[in-house]
Length: 636
Image (tube, rainbow, N blue to C red):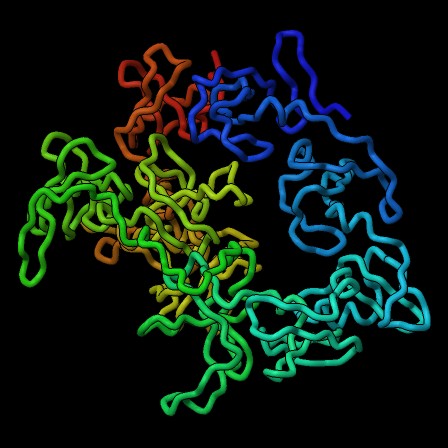
């Protein structure tokens, strides 16, 4: 089955990419360009790239010209399915990351998948080749038949793994007369399991029984495993869980304990709070905790090992935390100065700038410079400044670590100076300056490149915020609701109240500046969270349009000025004013990002009025909205 064809102009049309591909010489390929199929580097290989200028799709020639086997019929699906040996040909089926339809575990190649259904029906090769009927000791009276999903009362009560979290929707082996259902993992469970995570072998109990798993604390009603030496009973999946893991959101490794010892200082409760979901952690059952000095981090097993939290990194005995967290981008300290009891670097060389940088104390700063790292004002804080150009950094931005873990993403992130504007994956704003990015090849967002701006990279897993002073907020990856700061509905990643108040804000609102300068007010505007005025009398003093009283806004109490967020900040507040962009289609090449208010020419693409932050040619009156920068010009 051939999924590519050569076009008359010599380019290649590949099913997984919408644009024609052109052959590229090895000398034109950099080490940072990866194959869109196998995710390996294209450096030193025969490869194709997208023929469009702004599309950075690359693929090995060997990957692009593979062929698929013919489709086959499958008993539990309406359409034929195709065997995919690797990612070739599969990317066009779905942009999501679907699990195996049979065992509900993450897909890993080789897989069977249905092209007609857009990849929604996909199976591991071994799951797709399971027998339709088996004999099993769990039911000695009847054979068990394979079924594509569970439809009995058992489905409503618990999952096939007895985890009580989601309804089981995978394949089961069923005996309807006996009301028995077994998942694929249950069916092929071995009688004994020896694993390095436990010093004794686990023994299967081949009969139905209700229990609470000593490893994770969740209930079960299937065949458990027991350790008679330690008097433990656990789920099948928990027999293989590691003793110690590393999660990106916490600096230290966290280790498993089957129970937490209560000290005299503990109150009478038998639980602590999980630092991921902020629900109770029962002390008598297993959890992951941090044993580092003065660190009380603790998490449920199912929270710590969630795919959005943990990337699968196991900590071996004696393994220590990499010192990458302690390395910053200051390559040399050229001179130092003593300030009180502290010694501070006075002159430094920084990896992201070619001149030396000198320390300026906060009382020496006259004008509000913009930090080239986070693109926020430098005021009332120490900074490093270049004497030969306008490059400046907050002291904290100069000392950013090269590698960080962040609760928003499961993988470690690396610091990089962006050569062009990037979109932050957390707040969805365009930014200049420094960014943290993920280069983990198994990351679902690897090809799209997960990035964080500096402000978002500093967000902890929980925090106090002035919009909700009575309780802390914690990061939730599975929230389903609305943001309290803006009109956005149905947000999933949000900071929500630890006490489960009906309060949550998205990352975009959480990282709004607390104060902003407004050209027509001598006082800074302050971010406000509530407006008790008559809703019929609430207007923005900049655009003169009505404001929604439920949305956050900027306000000056002295002058009674109230502005929409976007009117106070502009649509792109973190793109550096005065920076230039290459405009290959324009005769003067460079467009400058400017903040205009009164001179409002029409956009050369959409013909709508350009005001505030736009791209403008300094040699002529050519102007474009930032959001129209990739659109064709209208010639009239």
